[in-house]
Image 1 (cartoon, rainbow, N blue to C red):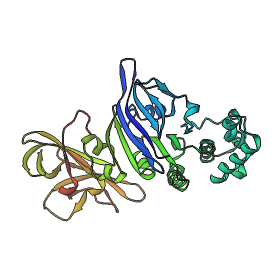
Image 2: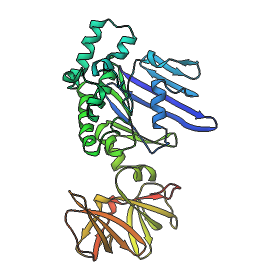
Image 3: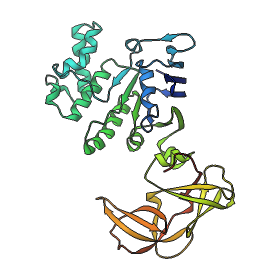
Image 4: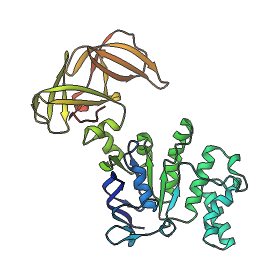
Length: 358
């Protein structure tokens, strides 16, 4: 495989547009995550690539094989696309053993029995499941069931594996371990993977690139570091990370720096969208960038610490400064009293106010 290409994909349910011109490429050995809120269109994109949804227009192509072309009326069925599918529910047959679940698709394709057994055992061995081949799904843990679903997708040696919220059924601790394991598996097997998730931490941990969707369009595309550290819109900045969003008015502009003012405070920030003096704006700063300071200074405010929550590896603080509310992280408990807080200008991003804010 050289690449999977999706070009200007559109899809509507009745009068409701779901996809509005989605385009991207997936190269061999690359992991790309479709990230977004519920209703953003990410699962519809995945199902369209799989052949489970029929777009109204656009084109989907794997190398020289056209899966879908709205203009030419081409729409290959699922079985002819030969893609590996891992569903959110795992969809395992409860009355079939692990080996029978993994090999079921091969049996439907009339693959010779000895070849079925060889390919099934190879897939199970790759995932450390060979010793569970004769067990039934109810005898497996959630993580083991997840791996069986992946083995079933890998047994065809597909050029692309499609994963729909693959970790959502796991508990928090196992999910954290599984995302590292899944990333290692995909890379070691040199697979190309397209993964749907609404969890930005999961997307960053697993992906080479992230496509952030909003209302059926790609809001921003880039590496995890680019989406986290250089958002191009208020929506992208707010969606990634844990943030403070501060409403203010632009008091002055100096190049890429703007000064925002509010009730009893003034902050400098980097302008990430065009702004004008007197315009309403919103500043976004990641919680980990907010600092406790030892006195007054640039981009510092005096704020009351009203709550401190212990999270195990750190503390989370809630501050009030007049009507301004913001949070910060720290490594020890602090007294519930006024503190000087610094919001570094380089880490404070200013955007024009959008309808969807923090």
